[in-house]
Image 1: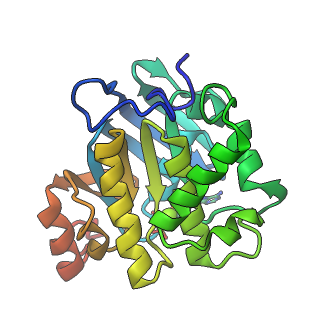
Image 2 (image 1 turned 30 degrees about the vertical axis):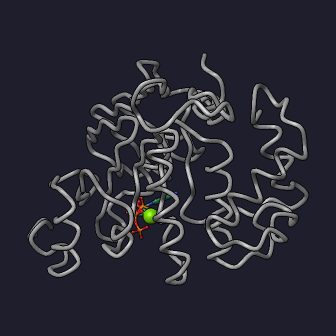
Length: 268
Ligand SMILES: Nc1ncnc2c1ncn2[C@@H]1O[C@H](COP(=O)(O)OP(=O)(O)OP(=O)(O)O)[C@@H](O)[C@H]1O
Ligand SMILES: [Mg+2]
């Protein structure tokens, strides 16, 4: 099993996906899943590699969050067929923490409040920096740097996780976690929703930078092309009724914003 991120957290392994940086791959094959006993995903195939930015767009209720939950092993979402592998290791059936150890990260659409647990303790428990050996001061510095990168007041890092944060603050706190943990592949479920226009730019820029800084691979779920002004999408996938019905380049996101999903929906 690799370390927390598989990319050498905190060791400054490099610049981009070139020499010195380990390549990672998340492969999803024929994934079918149900939520609350209802079949939602009907065969998803995706491959996300280090440094790539994949975007998933689709109507409300099409199964985007269910996909995110199935990838991370969120309780309540049951995989009924198919596989999810990280660097060739099967993740289906593994608890979320093992998937995190394998290098996967999920920013939830609705970040959960965890009273009594501070962000620093959470990150320390996650084993940031060589099995949790990072000195508290160093962790503090990294959290502060990441907060500043997304325009979050570092004072808010002292609150219990997400407790009493505004919607946009909670989304930026997810970004702090991502920046400190440096996962190999991240799944971002509407991390842009609720952000003001300045924060939107900050978050998109930080993500773009991360693809070069440690070669993170990104699977970003969003409803808005404007998120992709500063985050360059390699591929845009359209999900309708639990299936990926189209894949294109960044121009597809702009087209969807202008035309909607009418051409992709089942006409029944
Ligand atoms: N626990 C559950 N119990 C019953 N139905 C569920 C459950 N979770 C999700 N669903 C249903 O599955 C479908 C897909 O939901 P999902 O949250 O994945 O959609 P989404 O594409 O993320 O939508 P949005 O764009 O609104 O976030 C919806 O019809 C939803 O009501
Ligand atoms: Mg959703």
